[in-house]
Image (cartoon, rainbow, N blue to C red; front, top):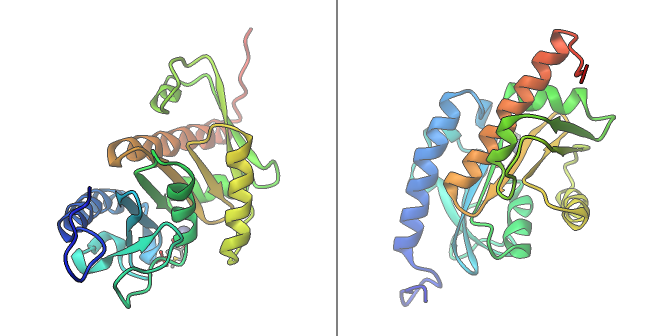
Length: 220
Ligand SMILES: CSCCC(=O)C(=O)COP(=O)(O)O
Ligand SMILES: [Zn+2]
């Protein structure tokens, strides 16, 4: 049962723990150049009905505690006048749909952005035969394929969220790309969401490198 104060509907100590975890991890992601120009956003489930999420427009490489705020499962601010990420709905929809989602990470790396443009018309990127596919929870072999969806970009978050819902209805998903924009990945906690994010980033780099080299996969 979350501990509450007289004035707050959530445990402020839990917010502090979640904020610390976001700040430390995002600093490392930013150092890799995955969050340029204030882009990207990050969140962590605090309790069954509250989410810690980055405030909109902050430099994600220099986050401090004041850059993390609380929203509910509908993405509405809780006990604050701060403005949450412009993409809050893409986070809250995952927490609302899946009780076991504990962390959502969104980045704008070069590989993610370039790949999202090259494969936008195809609608997805097939990742097949890589040992690193075992990084995704539930997978135990390299001998399989996953299709990473690429959605058209939009400033209309309810429209984007509706497209994500359709993808989630269609089968298991660990993340998706948005064209010319970036990657969303999630997991049960920060380490798992990070593992998924890093696996996608590495596999996209592999696909782009193979393309550069004009390589094709052959079984002969
Ligand atoms: C300058 S980045 C454009 C918005 C975006 O895609 C993003 O990830 C950051 O938006 P936020 O409101 O979360 O700061
Ligand atoms: Zn973004």
